[in-house]
Length: 165
Image (cartoon, rainbow, N blue to C red; front, side):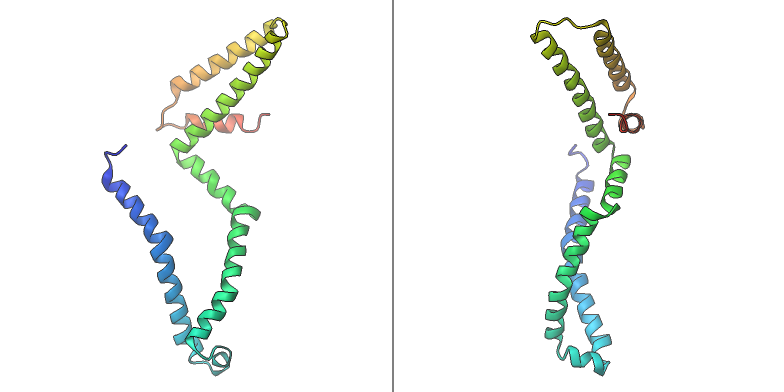
């Protein structure tokens, strides 16, 4: 994993830049440009914002709550984040593998718990239950044998099984 140090450094650089420096630079730039190119030249707006410092304070007091609401809506109230998560799953084979493995493990554990509970109560397993476990085993083994990080087998598995209860 660590053999691609240059790409890892590039990833950390882009995240540091986009999450911190670019954000700060963009905010300072936007405030400066809007004040000195727009507000300072319009007397009606200059009456509302007589100085750059007052402009920054007023915009900050109004802007931060609005941006918090927009961020909240993005994550919790719109389909935007869900769409991003879907794209992340579709394009990231490692994320996809974790989700598929979790689904397989959950399905297997639920069946095993049901069987263990039955055996604990001195009940015999039916032929259908044995066949269901055998079919699940076969399905998992076939899937594991065919999938790689480069192909779409995990995505196909996920799409095939995501609508089933």
